[in-house]
Length: 109
Image (cartoon, rainbow, N blue to C red):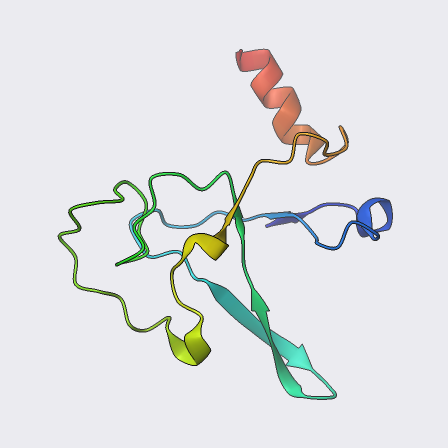
């Protein structure tokens, strides 16, 4: 996992991370983390540039004609698979965001 520099983007309202996920499994719509005042805090995830995403099973690669059973494991508290998980690609991101990946792409391109 990579996390952008918090000090550079603190006033933007969100923090961008890059995480390797198994694309054959459903995208998690949230995660929880320890929070002393409340025990655990649930964080809603948004996926930047999410395309071809099934709202039935939560997997990538199709958006219609799903052959998988509905994934009900992520529908706790009304947070399931939905368009609210999508986030447009933010083109105004600072150039320093994940610079090692940008250099690799530039050399390959």
